[in-house]
Length: 239
Image (cartoon, rainbow, N blue to C red; front, side, top):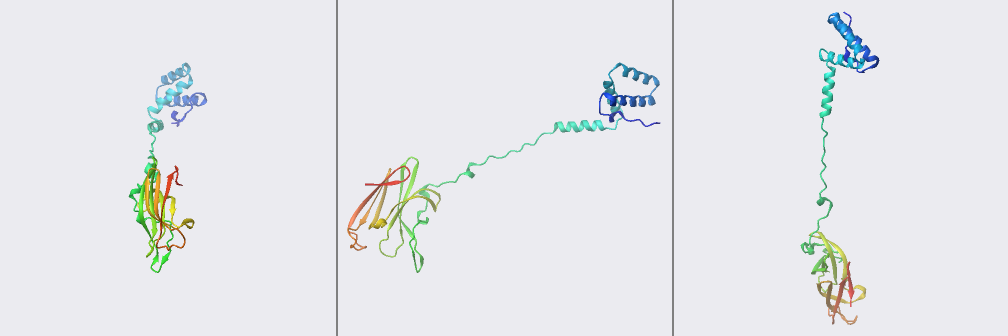
């Protein structure tokens, strides 16, 4: 028997491909069924558009003994249609990873903070610093400050005092320096600060002074006071 082409292998509907599909289908039916079937097929071809007949015959051939390719394509199409896209959710950045936590100034161990003072060195090594007084102030609703009076650890005598102003801390031993408020001996003055107070927007200091350069360092013979007022960003001296 002569081998005939399977109608499922023609994908085009209408035109020359459809005509060829119908011819092959007729050949296959003629070989398997009585001649009356061929005549009925011929009448169907004449009565209906070629494209529709080719489509109907091709579907019937695929249903009753094709090579399964149509079924496979249908399964593939269905699988593609049912595929669900994968959604990846990216977690939002935590605010705790983008901001630096700050401690209250009262939590700072001021004796362990490194101050910008050069106290020199001795045979035993570098001379350290000592904290003499700490005063906390809030000169404005959005300003919290710590005023720290520091001096070098001298073995004898009365070393000069320096007052630092801090406006924040990131650890118990690390604070942010806003300004240096006062330093004894600056500008050639002979003064020894004894006390430091802060109230509202004002800071006051007092201590000993010398009336002349001939007065020994051990024996001050006068008193002094000094005042500062908060300007919005720092303290300014007032009379």
